[in-house]
Amino acid sequence: MSIRSYGGQSVEVNDEGFLLDQASWTPAMAEAIAEETGLAPLTEKHWKVIAFCREDAAREGQAPGLRRIAKLSGVDMKELYKLFPKGPGKLAARISGLPKPTSCV
Amino acid sequence: MSNTEIAEAVVPETNTAPEPIKKVSIICSKGSLDMAYPALILANAARMSGIDVNLFFTFWGMDIITKSKLNDLHVATVGNPSMKIPTFLGGLPGMEFMATRMMKKEIEKLDLPSIGELLDILEASGTEMYACQMAMEMFKLKREDLVPQVKGVLSAMDFFDKAAGSQVIFI
Image 1 (cartoon, rainbow over the protein chains, first blue to last red):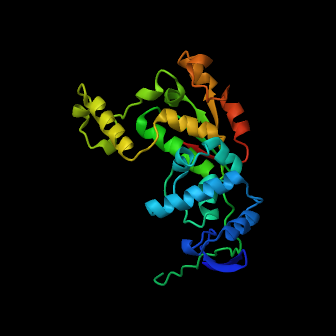
Image 2: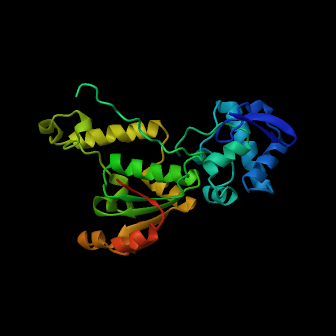
């Protein structure tokens, strides 16, 4: 666990960089995490994925797996890998301020 | 010699975290349902984590990428110690059919993708899938018998060239 500063705000993150408190997430933080993980600048498609992940997690109580994102967000699997080349399974959740998804698909 | 001294193990000190895995190559040599799923799900999990993946299908693993077989993979009830079915019963007609149907139901309940969908997902993720040349000849398979997601046919030596720098997993 450590404290990091994202978008001018100090937040607690775990060893893998996932926010501990998803309520503390702000869009500015997503930009800052994107910068840190080499994804910046975020495009409209990234924001579409982020919006879906936050909404779905609020509804379901857990971060969506990648297959779920590809099926329901309107951004397909191939595109997800283009948007998050370093691993969409983890990065989509991390940038959305959610915990690492538990789903393997 | 009553007081044997045991030297404390010397553990080298490291300040750096272990190097993350960058690439895995999975050899899929079995075509039963309970061998196909672990291989494909592991490959998918690796890609979702940003790890590069090669899949090399050989021997019975060819069934996973053979058009006429991939939707009809079975669970083995004979020679499968985890099934807890006595061998003499496991061999009875219909046993394998039943066990396979039960597992497929569980897979559906968990909303896991079918083998066909998993192959699509893996292709979209950039997983490279290869068929073994020798197994192709052995089972008299042609390129058109294989699913289109397969990128090519390789000899085992070609496979090891492709696997450069990766961890190799045999399933």
